Length: 345
Image 1 (tube, helix red, strand yellow):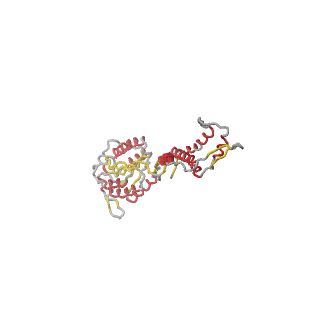
Image 2 (cartoon, rainbow, N blue to C red):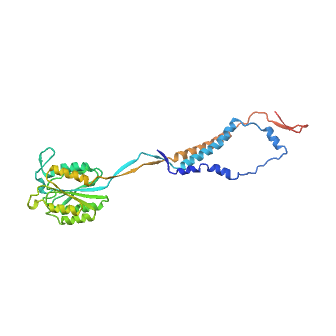
Protein backbone atom coordinates (compact mmCIF):
# COMPACT_ATOMS: atom_id res chain seq x y z
CA UNK A 1 0.00 0.00 0.00
CA UNK A 2 1.27 3.45 -0.94
CA UNK A 3 1.41 6.08 1.78
CA UNK A 4 3.15 9.39 2.47
CA UNK A 5 5.12 10.18 5.61
CA UNK A 6 4.67 13.95 5.20
CA UNK A 7 1.40 14.38 3.36
CA UNK A 8 1.17 18.04 4.44
CA UNK A 9 3.90 18.92 1.93
CA UNK A 10 1.26 18.96 -0.82
CA UNK A 11 -0.20 22.06 0.83
CA UNK A 12 2.76 23.95 -0.71
CA UNK A 13 1.54 23.15 -4.22
CA UNK A 14 0.19 26.67 -5.03
CA UNK A 15 3.26 28.41 -3.56
CA UNK A 16 4.93 29.34 -6.93
CA UNK A 17 1.70 30.82 -8.29
CA UNK A 18 1.12 32.78 -5.09
CA UNK A 19 4.64 34.20 -5.24
CA UNK A 20 4.11 35.16 -8.89
CA UNK A 21 0.91 36.98 -8.00
CA UNK A 22 2.26 38.74 -4.90
CA UNK A 23 5.85 39.65 -5.76
CA UNK A 24 6.53 42.42 -8.33
CA UNK A 25 7.80 41.26 -11.73
CA UNK A 26 11.47 41.52 -12.53
CA UNK A 27 12.34 44.54 -14.65
CA UNK A 28 15.26 44.66 -17.07
CA UNK A 29 16.64 47.56 -19.03
CA UNK A 30 16.34 47.01 -22.77
CA UNK A 31 18.00 49.20 -25.36
CA UNK A 32 15.46 50.25 -27.98
CA UNK A 33 14.93 52.86 -30.66
CA UNK A 34 12.01 55.12 -29.90
CA UNK A 35 9.94 56.32 -32.86
CA UNK A 36 6.63 58.18 -32.75
CA UNK A 37 4.93 55.53 -34.86
CA UNK A 38 6.17 52.48 -32.91
CA UNK A 39 2.71 51.16 -32.08
CA UNK A 40 1.61 51.38 -35.71
CA UNK A 41 4.81 49.71 -36.84
CA UNK A 42 4.35 46.79 -34.40
CA UNK A 43 0.73 46.33 -35.49
CA UNK A 44 1.71 46.34 -39.14
CA UNK A 45 4.36 43.64 -38.88
CA UNK A 46 2.48 41.51 -36.33
CA UNK A 47 1.50 37.99 -37.38
CA UNK A 48 -1.01 35.57 -35.88
CA UNK A 49 0.67 33.07 -33.55
CA UNK A 50 1.33 29.69 -35.12
CA UNK A 51 0.46 26.32 -33.53
CA UNK A 52 4.13 25.69 -32.82
CA UNK A 53 4.37 28.95 -30.91
CA UNK A 54 1.35 28.02 -28.79
CA UNK A 55 2.84 24.61 -27.99
CA UNK A 56 6.10 26.22 -26.98
CA UNK A 57 4.31 28.62 -24.66
CA UNK A 58 2.38 25.77 -23.02
CA UNK A 59 5.54 23.67 -22.69
CA UNK A 60 7.32 26.64 -21.16
CA UNK A 61 4.96 26.63 -18.16
CA UNK A 62 4.09 22.93 -18.07
CA UNK A 63 7.62 21.62 -17.44
CA UNK A 64 8.31 23.79 -14.34
CA UNK A 65 4.87 22.89 -12.98
CA UNK A 66 5.55 19.16 -13.39
CA UNK A 67 9.01 19.52 -11.83
CA UNK A 68 7.50 21.35 -8.84
CA UNK A 69 4.84 18.64 -8.34
CA UNK A 70 7.47 15.89 -8.51
CA UNK A 71 9.70 17.69 -6.00
CA UNK A 72 6.81 18.05 -3.57
CA UNK A 73 6.01 14.37 -4.03
CA UNK A 74 9.60 13.47 -3.13
CA UNK A 75 9.53 15.76 -0.08
CA UNK A 76 6.28 14.12 1.05
CA UNK A 77 8.36 10.90 1.32
CA UNK A 78 6.25 8.28 -0.44
CA UNK A 79 6.56 4.83 1.14
CA UNK A 80 5.35 1.38 0.24
CA UNK A 81 3.93 -0.57 3.19
CA UNK A 82 4.59 -4.30 3.00
CA UNK A 83 2.22 -6.81 4.64
CA UNK A 84 2.50 -6.77 8.45
CA UNK A 85 4.94 -9.11 10.18
CA UNK A 86 3.60 -10.43 13.48
CA UNK A 87 5.50 -12.05 16.31
CA UNK A 88 4.19 -13.71 19.43
CA UNK A 89 5.91 -12.82 22.67
CA UNK A 90 5.51 -15.21 25.61
CA UNK A 91 3.98 -13.67 28.72
CA UNK A 92 4.79 -16.54 31.10
CA UNK A 93 7.92 -18.47 32.03
CA UNK A 94 6.96 -21.94 33.19
CA UNK A 95 9.47 -24.21 34.94
CA UNK A 96 8.75 -27.93 35.34
CA UNK A 97 10.66 -29.71 38.12
CA UNK A 98 10.48 -33.52 37.93
CA UNK A 99 11.56 -35.90 40.70
CA UNK A 100 13.94 -38.62 39.42
CA UNK A 101 14.58 -40.34 42.75
CA UNK A 102 14.58 -44.12 43.05
CA UNK A 103 10.98 -44.30 44.18
CA UNK A 104 9.80 -43.18 40.74
CA UNK A 105 10.47 -46.70 39.42
CA UNK A 106 7.39 -48.10 41.17
CA UNK A 107 5.09 -49.60 38.49
CA UNK A 108 1.75 -48.54 39.93
CA UNK A 109 0.56 -46.44 36.96
CA UNK A 110 -0.94 -47.39 33.61
CA UNK A 111 -0.29 -45.80 30.23
CA UNK A 112 -2.85 -44.87 27.58
CA UNK A 113 -2.85 -48.47 26.31
CA UNK A 114 -3.63 -49.82 29.79
CA UNK A 115 -0.20 -51.43 30.39
CA UNK A 116 1.57 -51.16 33.73
CA UNK A 117 4.36 -48.57 33.69
CA UNK A 118 6.52 -46.86 36.27
CA UNK A 119 5.66 -43.45 37.63
CA UNK A 120 8.20 -41.59 35.51
CA UNK A 121 6.87 -43.14 32.28
CA UNK A 122 3.35 -42.01 33.17
CA UNK A 123 4.65 -38.53 33.99
CA UNK A 124 6.45 -38.30 30.63
CA UNK A 125 3.30 -39.32 28.75
CA UNK A 126 0.95 -36.91 30.50
CA UNK A 127 3.46 -34.10 30.79
CA UNK A 128 4.23 -34.37 27.06
CA UNK A 129 0.57 -33.78 26.23
CA UNK A 130 0.56 -30.84 28.64
CA UNK A 131 3.55 -29.27 26.85
CA UNK A 132 1.76 -29.39 23.51
CA UNK A 133 -0.91 -27.07 24.92
CA UNK A 134 1.55 -24.51 26.28
CA UNK A 135 2.36 -22.85 22.94
CA UNK A 136 3.15 -19.22 23.61
CA UNK A 137 4.89 -19.90 26.94
CA UNK A 138 8.59 -20.23 27.58
CA UNK A 139 9.05 -23.57 29.27
CA UNK A 140 12.08 -24.84 31.15
CA UNK A 141 12.73 -28.31 32.58
CA UNK A 142 14.61 -29.22 35.74
CA UNK A 143 15.18 -32.57 37.41
CA UNK A 144 16.20 -33.36 40.95
CA UNK A 145 17.39 -36.24 43.07
CA UNK A 146 20.36 -35.84 45.37
CA UNK A 147 20.72 -32.39 43.78
CA UNK A 148 18.74 -30.32 41.26
CA UNK A 149 19.91 -29.97 37.66
CA UNK A 150 18.72 -27.94 34.70
CA UNK A 151 17.70 -30.28 31.90
CA UNK A 152 16.33 -27.67 29.45
CA UNK A 153 16.60 -23.87 29.71
CA UNK A 154 13.60 -21.64 29.11
CA UNK A 155 12.58 -21.94 25.48
CA UNK A 156 9.54 -21.58 23.23
CA UNK A 157 10.69 -24.73 21.39
CA UNK A 158 8.37 -27.11 23.21
CA UNK A 159 9.36 -30.05 21.01
CA UNK A 160 12.93 -29.71 22.25
CA UNK A 161 11.76 -29.60 25.87
CA UNK A 162 9.71 -32.74 25.31
CA UNK A 163 12.65 -34.54 23.73
CA UNK A 164 14.86 -33.68 26.69
CA UNK A 165 12.11 -34.88 29.03
CA UNK A 166 12.02 -38.22 27.22
CA UNK A 167 15.77 -38.57 27.73
CA UNK A 168 15.52 -38.43 31.52
CA UNK A 169 15.95 -41.63 33.51
CA UNK A 170 15.28 -42.70 37.08
CA UNK A 171 18.29 -42.20 39.34
CA UNK A 172 20.25 -40.01 36.91
CA UNK A 173 20.22 -37.19 39.51
CA UNK A 174 20.73 -39.48 42.50
CA UNK A 175 18.51 -41.78 44.59
CA UNK A 176 17.32 -39.23 47.16
CA UNK A 177 15.01 -36.17 46.98
CA UNK A 178 16.38 -32.63 47.27
CA UNK A 179 12.99 -30.93 47.14
CA UNK A 180 13.95 -27.61 48.76
CA UNK A 181 17.11 -27.26 46.66
CA UNK A 182 15.02 -27.81 43.51
CA UNK A 183 12.89 -24.81 44.45
CA UNK A 184 16.08 -22.82 45.04
CA UNK A 185 17.28 -23.75 41.54
CA UNK A 186 14.00 -22.53 40.10
CA UNK A 187 14.26 -19.22 41.95
CA UNK A 188 17.77 -18.65 40.63
CA UNK A 189 16.70 -19.48 37.05
CA UNK A 190 13.98 -16.82 37.18
CA UNK A 191 16.48 -14.08 38.08
CA UNK A 192 17.15 -13.46 34.38
CA UNK A 193 13.47 -13.64 33.44
CA UNK A 194 11.47 -10.52 32.60
CA UNK A 195 8.19 -12.34 31.89
CA UNK A 196 5.11 -10.88 33.63
CA UNK A 197 4.10 -14.31 35.00
CA UNK A 198 6.47 -16.86 36.56
CA UNK A 199 5.31 -20.32 37.54
CA UNK A 200 6.94 -23.48 38.90
CA UNK A 201 5.24 -26.89 38.72
CA UNK A 202 6.90 -29.50 40.93
CA UNK A 203 6.14 -33.20 40.61
CA UNK A 204 7.45 -35.55 43.31
CA UNK A 205 6.57 -38.82 45.04
CA UNK A 206 8.70 -38.56 48.17
CA UNK A 207 9.71 -36.30 51.02
CA UNK A 208 12.73 -34.04 51.31
CA UNK A 209 15.75 -36.08 52.41
CA UNK A 210 18.72 -34.21 50.93
CA UNK A 211 18.06 -30.45 50.73
CA UNK A 212 20.21 -27.82 52.38
CA UNK A 213 17.33 -25.31 52.23
CA UNK A 214 13.96 -26.29 53.78
CA UNK A 215 11.23 -26.44 51.09
CA UNK A 216 8.89 -24.01 52.88
CA UNK A 217 11.68 -21.46 53.33
CA UNK A 218 12.54 -21.72 49.65
CA UNK A 219 8.85 -21.22 48.85
CA UNK A 220 8.83 -17.98 50.89
CA UNK A 221 11.74 -16.66 48.83
CA UNK A 222 9.87 -17.57 45.64
CA UNK A 223 6.78 -15.73 46.89
CA UNK A 224 8.87 -12.59 47.51
CA UNK A 225 9.98 -12.70 43.89
CA UNK A 226 6.45 -13.16 42.52
CA UNK A 227 6.97 -16.80 41.60
CA UNK A 228 3.94 -19.07 41.95
CA UNK A 229 4.49 -22.74 42.82
CA UNK A 230 2.11 -25.65 42.16
CA UNK A 231 2.94 -29.00 43.73
CA UNK A 232 1.81 -32.41 42.44
CA UNK A 233 2.17 -35.47 44.64
CA UNK A 234 2.08 -38.92 43.07
CA UNK A 235 2.34 -42.34 44.62
CA UNK A 236 0.96 -44.06 47.67
CA UNK A 237 0.32 -41.90 50.77
CA UNK A 238 0.60 -45.03 52.93
CA UNK A 239 4.30 -45.45 52.11
CA UNK A 240 6.58 -45.24 55.13
CA UNK A 241 10.28 -44.60 55.59
CA UNK A 242 12.42 -42.21 53.58
CA UNK A 243 10.20 -42.67 50.53
CA UNK A 244 6.99 -41.66 52.30
CA UNK A 245 4.86 -38.97 50.71
CA UNK A 246 5.09 -35.75 52.74
CA UNK A 247 1.75 -34.22 51.73
CA UNK A 248 1.84 -31.66 54.53
CA UNK A 249 5.04 -30.09 53.23
CA UNK A 250 3.77 -30.10 49.66
CA UNK A 251 0.57 -28.36 50.73
CA UNK A 252 2.49 -25.79 52.74
CA UNK A 253 4.87 -25.05 49.86
CA UNK A 254 1.97 -24.48 47.45
CA UNK A 255 0.09 -22.33 49.94
CA UNK A 256 3.15 -20.23 50.79
CA UNK A 257 3.95 -19.54 47.13
CA UNK A 258 0.36 -18.77 46.11
CA UNK A 259 -0.14 -21.99 44.17
CA UNK A 260 -2.24 -25.15 44.44
CA UNK A 261 -1.60 -28.64 45.70
CA UNK A 262 -2.72 -31.74 43.75
CA UNK A 263 -2.56 -35.45 44.41
CA UNK A 264 -2.40 -37.98 41.57
CA UNK A 265 -3.07 -41.56 42.55
CA UNK A 266 -3.19 -42.82 38.95
CA UNK A 267 -2.71 -41.72 35.37
CA UNK A 268 -6.29 -40.46 34.96
CA UNK A 269 -6.05 -38.19 37.99
CA UNK A 270 -2.63 -37.00 36.82
CA UNK A 271 -4.06 -36.04 33.41
CA UNK A 272 -6.92 -34.25 35.15
CA UNK A 273 -4.44 -32.27 37.22
CA UNK A 274 -2.74 -30.90 34.13
CA UNK A 275 -6.12 -30.03 32.65
CA UNK A 276 -6.84 -28.09 35.83
CA UNK A 277 -3.46 -26.37 35.60
CA UNK A 278 -4.30 -25.31 32.06
CA UNK A 279 -7.32 -23.49 33.47
CA UNK A 280 -5.42 -21.93 36.37
CA UNK A 281 -2.36 -20.91 34.37
CA UNK A 282 -4.18 -19.60 31.30
CA UNK A 283 -2.02 -19.19 28.24
CA UNK A 284 -1.65 -15.55 27.24
CA UNK A 285 0.29 -14.38 24.22
CA UNK A 286 1.38 -10.86 23.46
CA UNK A 287 1.41 -10.22 19.72
CA UNK A 288 3.50 -7.44 18.23
CA UNK A 289 3.15 -6.34 14.63
CA UNK A 290 5.50 -4.49 12.34
CA UNK A 291 4.94 -3.28 8.79
CA UNK A 292 8.17 -2.82 6.82
CA UNK A 293 8.36 0.47 4.93
CA UNK A 294 10.24 1.00 1.70
CA UNK A 295 11.07 4.59 0.75
CA UNK A 296 10.18 5.59 -2.84
CA UNK A 297 11.12 9.30 -2.76
CA UNK A 298 14.02 8.79 -5.19
CA UNK A 299 11.67 7.89 -8.06
CA UNK A 300 9.82 11.27 -8.29
CA UNK A 301 13.15 12.99 -7.60
CA UNK A 302 14.75 11.15 -10.50
CA UNK A 303 11.78 11.95 -12.74
CA UNK A 304 12.03 15.66 -11.89
CA UNK A 305 15.76 15.67 -12.68
CA UNK A 306 15.33 13.89 -16.01
CA UNK A 307 12.43 16.14 -17.00
CA UNK A 308 14.41 19.28 -16.21
CA UNK A 309 17.50 18.05 -18.05
CA UNK A 310 15.39 16.97 -21.01
CA UNK A 311 13.75 20.40 -21.26
CA UNK A 312 17.14 22.14 -21.20
CA UNK A 313 18.60 19.75 -23.75
CA UNK A 314 15.61 20.22 -26.05
CA UNK A 315 16.00 24.00 -25.88
CA UNK A 316 19.72 23.84 -26.73
CA UNK A 317 19.11 21.34 -29.54
CA UNK A 318 16.31 23.49 -30.99
CA UNK A 319 18.52 26.59 -31.10
CA UNK A 320 21.35 24.73 -32.79
CA UNK A 321 19.02 23.47 -35.54
CA UNK A 322 17.24 26.76 -36.12
CA UNK A 323 17.22 27.76 -39.84
CA UNK A 324 16.42 31.20 -41.19
CA UNK A 325 13.29 30.94 -43.36
CA UNK A 326 13.77 31.65 -47.10
CA UNK A 327 11.19 34.39 -47.44
CA UNK A 328 11.40 37.81 -48.88
CA UNK A 329 11.92 40.36 -46.12
CA UNK A 330 9.10 42.77 -45.66
CA UNK A 331 9.63 46.50 -46.07
CA UNK A 332 7.63 49.14 -44.33
CA UNK A 333 7.18 52.61 -45.88
CA UNK A 334 5.16 55.71 -45.09
CA UNK A 335 2.57 56.70 -47.69
CA UNK A 336 3.51 60.19 -48.93
CA UNK A 337 -0.08 61.43 -49.10
CA UNK A 338 -1.88 59.78 -46.20
CA UNK A 339 1.07 59.32 -43.86
CA UNK A 340 0.02 55.76 -43.08
CA UNK A 341 2.45 52.83 -42.77
CA UNK A 342 2.33 50.29 -45.58
CA UNK A 343 3.98 46.87 -45.71
CA UNK A 344 5.49 45.87 -49.02
CA UNK A 345 5.67 42.21 -49.92
